[in-house]
Image (cartoon, rainbow, N blue to C red):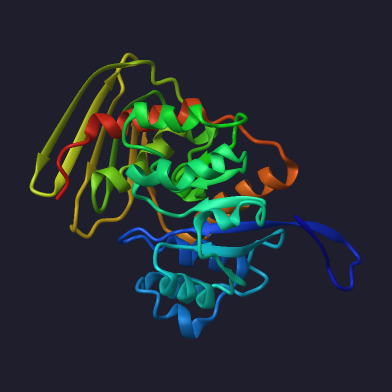
Length: 312
């Protein structure tokens, strides 16, 4: 870490140095996460290949809306030219030639790939070195795979993971709202794209709802075209049904139905959700206070695994 002196105030803050690893097909997080922390160059960012990223970044004011106590200082991808482009787009100073060049140079790692089958390959050198690591969602598509990664932690909380949507205000219900809905009988959730990578965006917010679901009594997974469904019955008599709808244009939405009413939770603000998750990780690293997340992550991964069928 380094100390940053804020002009005019005389206040110093510890700045966490981060290394980012990417890029998996269809996932622009190395660009977006780095830009949320560092700010960005609009000229290079417009060619990132993910039009939605420069679109929501342009709605922010930098550096005011960036994360003040962190800096992405290093980038590594399997393609040095791609690394250089991400570096220019997101103001990253150093392009690492080897993955392990970042060990000793950064305080923490952002593993910004959502191909969970490769998380162990890219994450293990940093887990073994005791470096805190934010692993993109989903951590794994099987409980066995998730447990394997957790087993390599040098301390509880070394791995930070999950969908940023569980930090989105619009995807949460307060206890007051839950009291107004009454005892929950049914939750229906819809997410676009494929099950393996995107179902976690609704599963994580459902798992974190402060309700007593009980244990899973039964589950059924099915597929029609590119639409995957998982329906789960709990001992509390609550039923949860989740659809991933492939290329169908659909909002990320969770509908919660109770004895006295219902609420629709619709995801709206990508920037704020990503920033909230990144800020929490940075604060954990800065304070060296790492939350234990294993139980909730394994609950989410178990639901992902129950719904895994052949993707489109």
